[in-house]
Length: 293
Image (tube, rainbow, N blue to C red):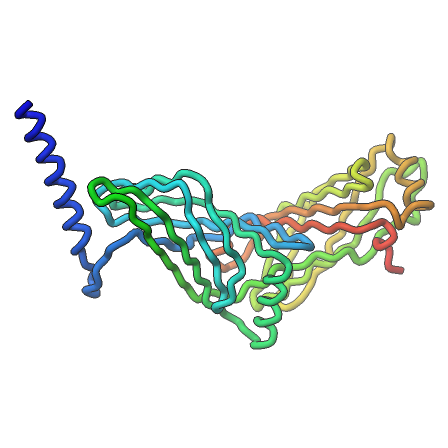
């Protein structure tokens, strides 16, 4: 029994010593480092839709404590030049290892209204760069100390990124017939940024009436200069078994027939935060909106 008591006292002493070390550990600038910190490493998987822009942010959590800490929830907000564009939660268990970095990926969904407000602000003020800020907080249970809430914040000035836009310019349906099984779409990809973009390994799918599916891929790289646009020719193969239905829809039910164009590719840029990112465009409408001429 005496050995167990000594072991317990020793354990408590180690924990208290660790707490004291954490409590008074200082940074090189002389400030007391009391809590974990975070930073944004990269942005990936951009999904540009009509109602919102979705993306994934890689977050690095650093833990200066001599013990691992766990949490079941991370609440976060994202600001661009003090404009709040996202407020959400990461509801998965997180284990932040002692004296090292832990990486997680959090979803960022920017809805249509805050995105429009942000883009209007960037254009009005002719912003080429912006201050990106992530604020987050977690609750953890620390031995001896009990429950504690940590607040973390990371800010960095980066190029003011504006999502590219994909619009269908025209569709060639004049050659369609029961012996033909192809349709050509001409789209324009607009790059509103002050830096050039490239699109690589493009794959696309065109769905009509939630039933007729046409797919294809791009072999070439699409170069889009800064503040400019580039055409994209999309060649679609229609399964012969669906040709009759598609022709009927095009001839007699354009207005009531929905379509969805999904185009996914790798995004190439010299901006490190977007390295190896993928972007997906989603366009929805009805067949009568396809052909402008």
